[in-house]
Length: 110
Length: 112
Image (cartoon, rainbow over all chains, first blue to last red; front, side):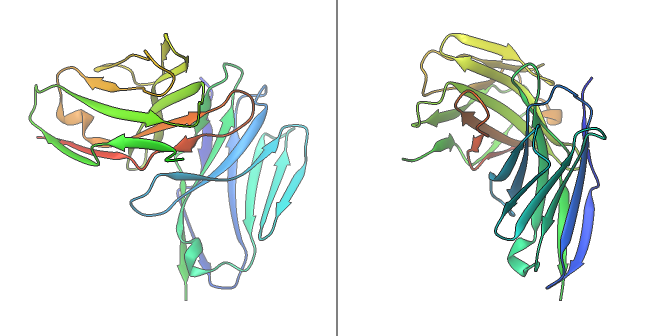
């Protein structure tokens, strides 16, 4: 079946850029999403990108999409301690369901 | 707007007990879903609904029932709780099209 894959853990120094990567298998995915989950909370939609776009920028967040390789990335510029969270990649598939990856835990080093 | 409201926030059940996790949204969203979150497993889809009276199974539906009698409410029923159902449960809703989900704050369920 279809799948969304992410690395489980990323450590970044405060002030550096964080890059979280995701791959997906469903070639008919129309929209792809990044969600953020802080400890003890639900998921919060950070940003999304349409499958015919290559890039989307929103303040400190940059989303890059390589549709040929089915690769999605989220870059967070000037990473802050408040960015410490789990980040989920997700895609809207052909059955109109949203499928989530396992999440990448971002740890900020001082 | 309250968004998506889940109750209770915490629950402890004994094996074999049944219970209903409540979910309500006030955004007039057509789509609603239940996910469970387990360590290292991400979010797995249990059941979802594309409108009142319409439900379908997700990836891990066994042991759970749902119904959607109104647009606002989407309760999740555990028929006979098992320790394997210990998890954090999230309800989410969205409109049709590309809009992503709005999530509730979750219900942490422990089955002993």
